[in-house]
Image (cartoon, rainbow, N blue to C red; front, side):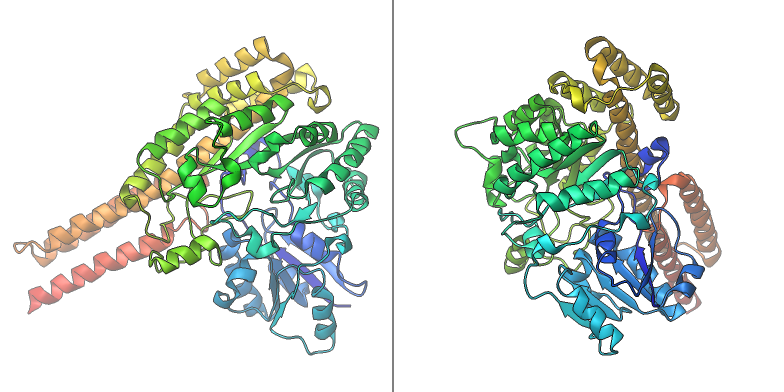
Length: 590
């Protein structure tokens, strides 16, 4: 019986990864590897399967010793972890089979993989397994068409411990009818939405329910309302299932902003148990929205269309989480304050603001290539459709219209204002949200006074002394004005703790790299001085390395991660300094 090890590489820390919030929730990862669990359900009975989610537990040598084959599925943000997994498998002599969005776009840049199964795998995976068993497996398999997802099996949720995760995941649809210039969803899944049947979705809900799952459930569709007709068929069925079991799942998903114009659909979403939706708002600048081919976010006869849309969704009873982009063509220096003002006024506590990146294969990538604006850098800084964010320490991969220094400084100001060290701005947004959020009885999860007090104190203990006043004022206002929302307020506070901390983490990492660059320039200038001698330069180097090491060690340990780029930056810095010293020594000797 072949042993198939399904390995999910690690995510680096990110805004939507909620790594710091998970510490408070007492969980290990935000979401399970839905793609791999779906692939697991496609194996015939003759295989012995194991899943290692590296966001939950490490990949051990004993796992590789057990495995005959390793299967991976990754998004772009997992690329560095995937490299490590491939290298370890290669050393262990275990063949790697790779699939998912990242290999589908970048397989030509990935080495060490025995077989690629690209695109969507429902119809091509059985062919691959058949060839594999017959010893005729090819290096690359590509799905010639978009599969019919009504044949997609129920994911093998039984292969994981659901208690390790903050939320479970299911998928209803693939594809999106819109053609946003920067988005790669239509390249991956097409513009004709394909949906599962209500019966399929109920079976997936049942599978999770039987495993004992209760709580958050993310419908991972890139645009849940892309097929409004099928969504309206599904939602009453889910509502009936939820009501019959006392609403065991709290649902959230992604959708376009025109959801706000679908009154009937929002009503039935509420009935089905949805309490939040992630919306790609991108920018309040209509000109930039039209340039990026996102007309669904613009309504010429309504100046405040985006703000009004957010408010409409909130008034129905769903929190709006928002994605925003800086660095768009037609952005100027006013874009930074515009983003801050919009997010604060709209009451969007959880807002991811990212620098634009040109993803390979998108219309944006093609346009910038035609305009000779692409830079010779990896186009891999995009995470996925839920995490559309570039870290502050990742350079742009194209030449923006705005001055790059102005853009970088403006971006930094936006995120450090939204998630300021005191969390005052964050809690102001939370209060605005709760003021406008309709309290829907079946969406409110009551807690005992003891449990609620314990949760509130757990958050308080994590906050810094600078954050406690704003937190206490916020909770006091909620207790007075929105007492039924206290559990939701506590959850929002946990997320605020994470968002501020990861902002500080990324700023800290970037500051260290900027520090290295400044120190290197100063050292170069010192070495170029004609009156210096070899001994003095050697002492300068030693003092510099000591200073850098001290600064390096000042970075909090929980801010470090495998993909922070600090080690390569240190190596480059030290090599540059040593090269300058050697060059000086050689010149002095001659």
